[in-house]
Structure formats: C-alpha cells, structure tokens
Length: 170
Length: 103
Image (cartoon, rainbow over all chains, first blue to last red; front, top):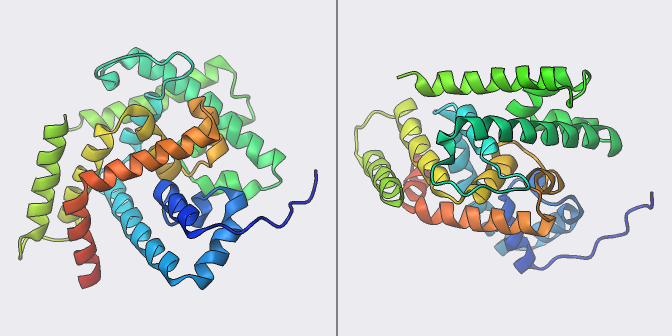
C-alpha cells in the first residue's frame, strides 16, 4: 500500500457537484476529496453558503425519514434494486417474490461489502458508523457467513415480515 | 404517480403554512409524507442510490457494488436524484426552512 499523496485542490464547481450529489455531510463525500473540500470550505464564503443550503435540504430529508419509520420504505428501496438483470416492472414493490430475492441478493452484497470495508480498510468504525437496518440486522449473521442460505433466508424473512407488518398496520 | 406526488407535496406545504395548525409530530409526518412520496416518484436506481447514501450511510464504492454500476454512475444517480427531489419538494423545503428558522 502506498501512502496517499497530497490530493489536488478542488474548484468551487467541483465542491458544488459534491454537495449536489452527496449533500452537506462530509462523511458522505468521496474520501479522497474530503480534505480538499474542507480546505476550500475554510477559505471560500460562497462554498460555505452552498454548504448551508445543502445542509438545509439534508435536514428536510432527515426529518422526512423520522416520522414515518423509514425502515419499511428503505427495505423496499433496497429490495427494488435491480441486480445484474434489471427487470422492467410498472410497480416493483407489488412483486413480493422479486422483492424478496432482490433483497436477499442486496443483503449478501451489502454485508459482504461492509465486512470487507471493516476488515480491509483498517477502519472498523466505518461499518459501525453506518448504523443501518441492513448492517445491524445482519451483524450477528456475518460470522456465520452471509452466503449461508438458511441463515440468509431467516434474515430476509425477519426483515421482510417486519416491513410488511408495518405497512399493513392501518 | 407524479400527480399524486404533486398533490401530497402541495397539501403538505399548504398545511404547514396554516397558522395555529398543530406542530411537532403532525408536521413532521406531513413532511415525511411529502418526502416519501417524492422518493417513491424517483426512478428506482436514483431512489436506491439516495436511500443507500443518505439513509443507509454507504459510500460510493459500496453503492456501486450493490447497484452493479461504476462509481461515476453512482455520483450521477445521486446528483439527478437529489436534484429531482429538490424540485419536487420546493414548497415543502421553503416552509421547512422557515419553520427551522422560527424555532
């Protein structure tokens, strides 16, 4: 592994692209650009203004995620991710069987990626910091092996039934 | 779907603007309803990218792996998704900012 070089500075235009894509939270920005972005932020009032605007929109999205218990919606969003063979469907959330299989595949990938990040990148906090339904619901399963079909089925069953229960509650 | 979203967003913006309307949880539910409606109106890959980045906290490489796309494509999905959300939530966002400044 080579030591990271001093990253080049970024322009305000690139900084605004970061805000446009990732929002105002530096932890969401691509890691190599965080330093240069912070440096720009420290010296550019216009960048600071843009950051405040992005932060306000982040708060809207955050507030929007609190009151309605987003876990069901997020599980749906993860379940709808087309993997390798994107299906063309008008209302994918109605297709429970596809959603379950896609969720299973997404969980395998997400758990594998999180496990890989936690061990290979020498940043154990990164997996914990995600604090996600996917990560936390799967944390006990990681040691047993994410590829174990029985445990994966049980995990998916649990997650999906929870979501359905929440959605079906009047 | 788009009409439903617009209706929900307009209703939420209107309700939030009514003086004396109950605040707190009800307002947050109205905001949440508008945000959820806007999210559901996004193309599914944009919605998934937003959910994984903003709500699940995954980084670009992880999202790229999950969606089976390049890192550059992830940034494009996120940009288009957030831009679309901002357009759909303009009224709610303005009211939300006003409420935040007033509290």
